[in-house]
Image (cartoon, rainbow, N blue to C red; front, side, top):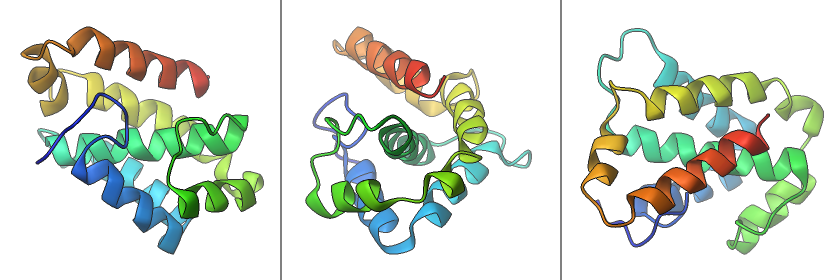
Length: 133
């Protein structure tokens, strides 16, 4: 898995997920959160964690109108036209999924702990949590 930065879309998985959302809309967001929150998932792999972060970033951008972190033009267009009534119920799922990504049964915190960018990654995730309320 190629990671080139701490942002939600600065890895192969997050960048690819953006295209899934353009194609599948809110369903892709809900699915990313549901997979992370599945009680049968014992340990959350990094790939699923990256999908949750990207999904949460997209949801936060749509709900708050803060789209500075969305650099992909088709995704930005999707966010601008998203049905907020359809997306608002995903907010609670997103918050719970973020908690799961940050928890002890998740691979991402362990991967970032060994990185010189660990504090920057943590700060970005905290910003995302705050944006979702």
